[in-house]
Length: 210
Ligand code: VGL
Ligand code: ZN
Image (cartoon, rainbow, N blue to C red; front, side, top):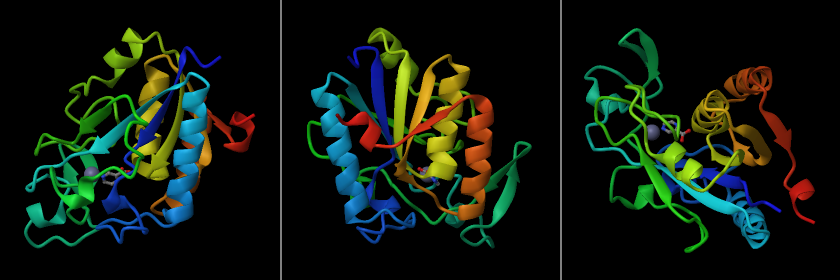
């Protein structure tokens, strides 16, 4: 029944979790959260839903790291090419333990990497800030996917950006709200409003599992 639906698990990686004491831990990303996500995704997969993962995959000198901007601190914001960029602690460095996805082996068909270009950030799983596609849209189209269930980290950054791009690309987008967690409650509230205005729906995990 889920033949044209895919689930996208966004950036469920060690560095974003409190469970693994990550470099940029998102509040609420504890053992229970990781387990619930794995269970829900496994149940969806058993019903024919394809599961994909995105992973943040940064070089050491990535533009989003405060360490790449002398004199700046973590969580400062700077202007880059006319947009505001938040500066993060170094996280999800390619090949490092912190970049490892916390998803059971074999659950995801593919992991789509993003944020590989040192000059551009990429909150969205579809395009980086320079407009370069990650390949996720092509993969979904090749598999006749028209509807996306989205969960993962962080709700107010990468989940939001991925969902908004998905809407622009013409997908029906449903966020599994309790299987997301936000960096900050204020930006989460704003994200919720933006997503709703864009036509994104919200659903509980329980209502997907019969
Ligand atoms: C993310 C901040 C920096 C995310 C990635 O996955 O939401 N947030 N890089
Ligand atoms: Zn990042």
